[in-house]
Each structure stands twice: as C-alpha cells, then as structure tokens.
Image (tube, each protein chain N blue to C red):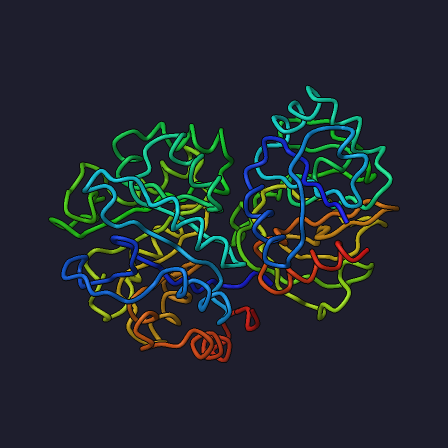
Length: 195
Length: 253
C-alpha cells in the first residue's frame, strides 16, 4: 500500500511522518500530481495560516488536484480547514470539499484563544472513530474552527460546539493533531490507513 | 472539556536530563529519549525539552537528540534553548519538534516573536519568561535567570501575546527548585492579563501545589522536572488526584 503525504509549507510534516513510522506504515512525501493520484491513501497535513497555505497550494495546482482525488484523503488541522468552503482567517476562499465555513472563536471570558490542549470529542460516528471511547481526548491547537454540519463525525466543545472531524465520500478530516494525540490519535491514523 | 495539562520538563545538558536547585548544582536524571517515552505512556500531556546551557554556551540545541525524542513520543513536544533565528526554528521543526520556546532572544529582539509567528504560526511559538521579584517588582531575567532585564513581567507577557506568541511558559526564579509551591499570585496575574495559555513552572513539590496552581494560580498547564524524574511524584497518581479534586484531566494516554 502506498501512502503519500502532500508536501507543502505545512510545519508539522515531520511529526506526521514520525507518527506513521511508529505504527509501521510506509509513506512518501511528495507534491507530484502523478504520484499523489496513484497513491492508495493521501494525507494532507497542515499547520500555519490559511491564506498563505492556500496561496501555496494554488501556485502548484494542488487546490485543483485535491478535490478531484478518488482514494481516501485525510486532512488535519489547517489541512481540514482548507478542505472547507471558506476561512475567516484573512478572508480566505478554500477548496470547498466540505460545505461549511471556518470561523474564529469569538472572544469570550474564560476561553483563551488559540484553543490549546487536550479536549474531548463526542457524538462519534464514521470509520475513523472506530474503537474510540466517547469523550476520547485529543490534542488541539487552533484559533479557527469549522461549524457543526451534516458531515460532522466528531464534535468538540470550546466556546461553542464545532466539528472535530468531518467525513464526506472519500474525504476525511480532523481538526486535532492525530499525530501527537497519544494512543487515541494513533488509533485514528490506523483506522484511516485500514480503509 | 478542555483539560489542564501536566508537563514534565527535560532539562538537557550534554545530551542528558538534569535539574538542580535554582539552575545550579546539576544532577543527572537520566536519558531524555527513554524518559520522554515513559512520560508519554504514563499520560503526560506534553513534553518540554530545554537545552539549558545553550544560551550561555552559545551552543545550538542538539538536533539529533530532538529527532530521537520526537520519534519516540506521541504527544506534543516543545524544544527550547539557544534559539535565535527563523533558521534555528526551521531546523528544530524539521527534526520533529511541535513547538519552540524562546527566551533571551525574544528579550534581545522582540520582533523575532512576530517573525516566527508569521513564518510558522503562533501555535508553535512559546515565549518562556523567567521572572524574579526584585525591589518590589517582578522583573524578567535571561540567561537561565542570571541576568536581569529592564522588563516588567506583566507588561512583557502582554507584549509577547500581542506579538503573536501562542503560549507563555512562566518560571518564577524565586520558587524554582524550592519545592515550596508555584508562585500563585504572579501566575494568576499573568494568566489573567494574557489571553493565551500560561504554563506555570518553578516550585512544584507536592500534588497539592498543582491543585493550587490550577485553581488559585489560574494556570492552563503545570510544568515540573526533578519531582517527576526522581519519581517523587508519579504522573498517573497526580492526574488521578487532580481529577478527584475537580480539576479537568485527561486520565488515559
């Protein structure tokens, strides 16, 4: 099985690679269209700022490629946000795979932004959450979040409920960092690779 | 519910974990790779890896060690010590660090915080603030707490937030190594002034000290080194205890 990690200016690629090493998965890091299309699984990581990341994807045509992929695709963190319709972060039009917008956490007393740390996910459904207990803890670091929508497969609550995971057709996404979310995160990655 | 975090800190010198009282008289507390993996399995919420001699000796953090530790752990991992440029950060992130912690270099060149936040995102920029109470004021110190600056702690905390820091690692040099408890008033003041998470450090000696820092001290995370390294406090027991005291904790790994 060939898994590729899409190579772009995302800061956490190394952590994702180590996580795959720990579960014994082989992978390649690439931005080559032919190689990405031929892969069995595609991981689209992301850390950083939405508009810069989108600009980078556009320059390389990856913004057109990713929505047309047919194999299972997993976007994480900003990767997930870029798969949504629009992000409030610097007013960025995104890829629109998931028909939902990404909004900044409203300023609320008692809630620091970025939402940083381990939070529980609930209302679990879909294949990536298989084997996870309800209220499993995963690691988040983000200031923007996708609203809850029909594609939501896990809900997290911070200020208000938001989509911790999304799934639509062959597209999967997690707002949290599965690669550094302990044994729970490892299970999510294993579930994805097992699809 | 968002949990409070328990963070073991691996202070590193010559590739080994060390920790002494008030940052002197270093004792060897073991292999950082092994310790990091054990902590992750025990349910530590994050690891901080500080090359404590890096600034003083002008040495760069040992990239190879970072690589090994990052490979062995499945929880977030912060690296600090001797970081003064975008290139330094890039090298650490490429080695597997999730965040970097900057201290002296941020004081010397505050614009570095803005540059790092812009280049890598706020989520990976932790600003460490070493503070000491001098002449009735909390004053920021650098170089492992040896060198006073002109900065007042609370004002500096607000400034680093405004410049794009994602978290503050606040170490009280007055309580560090004493095992007499965290600097609660100061931690609460910084946590109240900043709208970013505050990791409290310095002074943990008992499990109740952690209760205090999360309640009275309003900290988002509590960091300690020797009490964990020398097994004076066991992380699973600590988290169980804090949970029983009504503090939100992640009790699995």
